[in-house]
Structures are given as C-alpha cells and as structure tokens.
Length: 349
Image 1: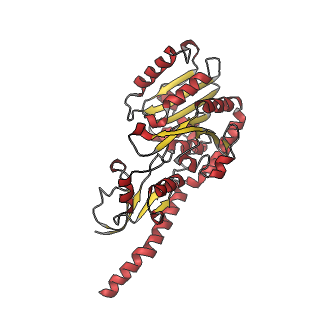
Image 2 (image 1 turned 45 degrees about the vertical axis):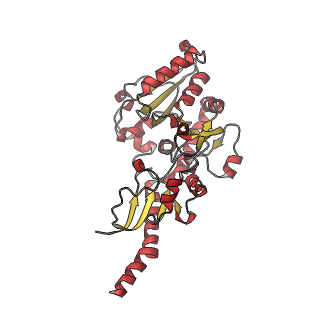
Image 3 (image 1 turned 60 degrees about the vertical axis):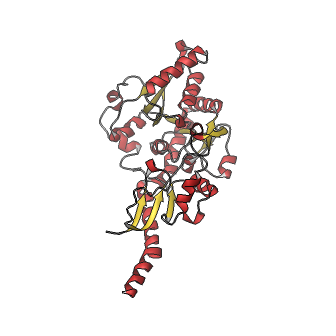
C-alpha cells in the first residue's frame, strides 16, 4: 500500500532522518526540532534531500535556526504542538479528579502558603543546578514557601544522587546554610498521566530556567492550568510564553513580565550539550531568576492574575486548534501536489 502523505518523527535517529521510511509515501514530511541555535551540516543535507518534501518544526525559533544553518526556507513550516486544554488541562477538569494526588506521591500535608513547582526529565539541559542555586540562596526556612521538584531519571542517571551531591557542594562552599534551608521536596516517583493536572492544580507557580527547549511542554501545561510561569527568555519555549520576536524582547521590564509569567534574562550563550552537540544554548541569569521568584512570592495576586491571562494566551495550542491546522496543511498538500499527479497518471492510462 502506498500512502498519500507520510509524516516521519524519528527522534532517536536525528533531524530529518528517513531511517524508518519504507518508501510507501507519495509525499514525505519530516517532523523535527532541535534545542540549540543551529544544526549539523549532515542534518541540513538530509533536510534538503529529495527524500524529504517538507520539514515541520514546532517554533519560529527552529524556522530561523534551520534556515540559518542552510535548510531551504521553502521546505520549512512552523506547526506547534497541542494538548487537551478543556477535558484534561484546565483548572475545572483537575478539580473533578477525586484522587488525592499529594497523598499518592507521599507528600500530603507538606504544602506551604505559596507552592512552587518544576517538572522535567533529569538532564543538564534543564539547568537544574541553576534552579536549585537560585531557590536555595533566595529563600530560607522563614519564608512560607515550598518547592516541589518533579523529575525522573534522564541522561544523567539518578536525580536524588546528583542533587544530594550538589547540595553537599553548596554547603561546603558556604553558598547555603544547611540549617536555614527553605522547604523543598524531590518528587521522583511516577504519577499516572491522568493525575498530573491535579498535581499542577495544587501549585501556585511553575519555574523552568532551562538552557534550551525545542518546545517546552510542561510550561504549556502549567499555563493551561493558570499557573504563572518563570521561563528562560530564549529558544522554542518563547513560541507560546514570552514571545520570540525582537519586539517582544525589547519590551521587557525589570521582572521580564509577559502575559502569563516572567521571562528570565539570558546572560550569555555557551556550547550546547557541553560541546557534544551542534550550536549554542542559553545560560539564564541566576540573579535575575532569584529576583523573579522573590517578586512572584511577594506579589502573589499579580502572579495569580498573570497565570489566568496566560491560559488565554495558551488556548491557541489546544489540540483541536492544532489538529485543524495540520488537516489544512494535509489538504493543501493533497490538492497542490498529490491530486494533480494522480490526475496525470489517469490520463496516461
């Protein structure tokens, strides 16, 4: 059987890979993304090859990074990711979940007056050291705050092992005082997907000062749940958060406020993946993150209102809206490329 359109998304094989292509499609779309600011020459060549008709990337950031690397602009299309903003990722839907998610995670009765969360796969790209340094040096046990770091094993192995080692380093360097630490919980146990919105619903704010994101799904989920977000002002996550354009960046105030949260200033760029990947990624300012977190904590009503507005900003990425865009693209491809070829083949017969 030969399909009219085949979409390839082969993350393990790299950008624009056709590794799993069985030659059974008239029109081949590669769905790709990359977190840093350029891609490899070999990947550019794959994207530009005759085997790929279009390259779909989720953000304008990747449209620019792929183009500047040498991918043909005519092949590139920005198509975002979608989530269920109404049946799953909404405050109302989360409230209808009867299960006590905090109890299931073994942290019931731990919440403070203001509760902050982060969620990511445990790896260096997420800048977990910068996040911990900012939180633990800005707050202490006198603050009515608790931070829940929800993570799971990634490229760097066991989170608890590495986090404990890093805390020992900060204590030995007298960066933090072990007796004055603010409330913090590492949540590395698995949670059922249907309960995850409930966990977000227990929180007051979300933070993710990562070095780079291809998209940043947990940030979008947080915005859908009306949580104010503090995120790095760089990369793919700006597509739906702080805004990618130069105009957006030029209108930041002291706290990096945008509709939905706060943009963390970038100090500089550095080689991505410790030089083991192509391009550079961002180094978010720890001092700016500290000031943002303190501002959110001391201006909770402002942060709460920003979160409510952020959901409205995020609604354009409801899965129904994204699906409609994808279907429009498919129809245009069929009418513009596939139908004429089929008509020509019929005439020849």
